[in-house]
Amino acid sequence: MNYTVPMVVKVLKVLKAFQTAGPRLALTQVVSHCEISKATAFRILETLRGEGYLMRETRGSYRLTYQLLEIAMVVHARNALRRTALPHLEQLSSEVHETVNLGTLEGRRVVYAEVVESQHRLRIVPSVGSRAAFHATGLGKAVAAWLPTEEVLAIIADDGLKRYTANTITSSAALLKELARIHERGYGVDNEEEALQCVCVAAPVFDSRGSVAGAISISTPTSRTNSRRVHELGGRLQVVALAVSQEFGFKRETLLPPAH
Image (tube, rainbow, N blue to C red; front, side, top):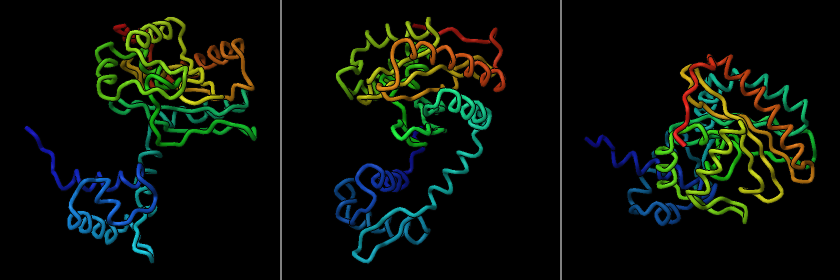
């Protein structure tokens, strides 16, 4: 049975338009981007404005307010894995002098839940709340390596294997082989696969059931790393990720094997 409410779907499309189409949108832009009627778009925009989620500017365009951020911060503050991991992320960042990230698994998506920035002027800083591509980021691959094969293939079927750089893996067979190697090694590497001049190393975090719950990664410019350092960072990440997993209730004997 389908419980979807069509008008709610349209409202969510309008909100998402401000993420994908631009921070300020006129009525005509919302109509075009969301493919809804002008009357419906106007009613949605004015309702959101009346409830405080949008502000109308002098030229008639709309922009988001901070009200959605206030709601998102509740999720951020109450994320149990983030609370458990944060002291470890801060300590690790101070040790390696690079940006350290936490990705949490939400459904079939890995989302950046925390970012501890490097103090270097040249640094890689993802946005909290953004999504990590399963096939092209350290976080995504570290999580995917411990998911069942059928789930990985379902994600590929839904999202595809978008090419970001010449190094991006765009073959299902090649990705499954890479995930098997990551599982054997214990950590994943994004070698300029999502962005040029950026290397990301990541290790998985597990919950009390032995299921993968997310991953911790270190992002660094290529100018500050080499294959030896990648290996060192991978080893350090495994130690930190295991400590976080254990504080999160993980016991090694509960670890679920992947199906790769």
